[in-house]
Image (tube, rainbow, N blue to C red; front, top):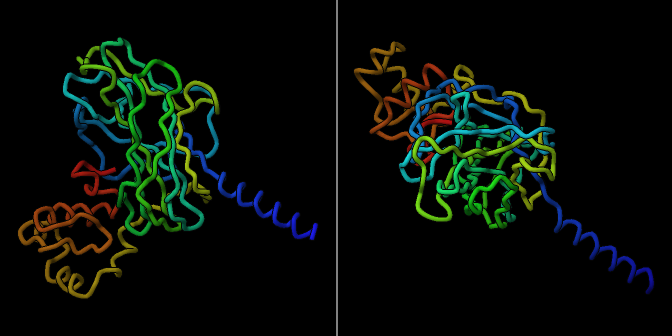
Length: 301
C-alpha cells in the first residue's frame, strides 16, 4: 500500500513537472542560419515607411551577454510599425529549425525592453509570432499577436501570457518574431525626431533580455540554411501546372506576355490571378523564399 502511495505521489510530481515545462527564445543580435532573403528591399508601414532591407536575426534558447539596441525615429503616422535600426534594416528574428514536430497550443508570455527619448512619444511595443514552413520556404500563418507592453521606460516590460492559435508545426519549421512599435499611454507623439529603442541580446534576467516564453516544450536542430531551393522543386508541380509551364517557354518574356491563371508553384502561398505574374516571375528567378503573402499583403520576409 505504501508503495502505491509513493507511486501516486511521484506521478503527481511528474505531472506537475510536465505542466511547468517551457521553452524560452531570446532575441539575439546575431544572424540566422537562413542568411539574408533573396528578395529584399522592404517598405515599412504605419509609423515607419522607410524602404530598406530586412535582416534575419536569430532567436535562440541561449541568451546573449550584452544588450544591443535597435533605435529609430518613428513618424507622426499612427502605429503600429516594424522596429528599425540605425544600420537601415528591419530586423526579424528566426528560431533554429525544429528537430521534431509539435503543436503550439500552450500559453505564450513575452518580455520586451524598450525606451523612448521623450515621454510624449507614448510608445509601447508588442511581439508577433509566425510559423515559417520548411515545406513552403516561407511564413504561412500567424501564431499569436501579443498585447502591448506598458509605455516604454528603459526597463524590462512583461506581457501577460495568452493562448495562441493552435498551430501544428513540422520538423524543420521555424518560429519568426517581429517586434512592432505601438501607441500606449496617450496620444501618439512620433514626429521623426523622437526616438524609440528596443533592446535585445542581453544576459538572461538583465535589462535587454527580450524574449518569448512558450508553455510548450520545443526542441531545435542545428541552425543551418534549410530554405527551399528552386531547381530541386520543379518536379513537385502538379500535372496541369507542369503542362501549363511547358506551354509557356522558359523565357521571362513569354511569362510576361502570357501569365498563368494561377501561380503554378504549389508550395507558394497567397498566389491568385491578380498577383500570379509576380509569383511566377519571382519564383522562377529566386525560388520560394519568403515571398509576399500571407503577412496581410505586406512584403516578403
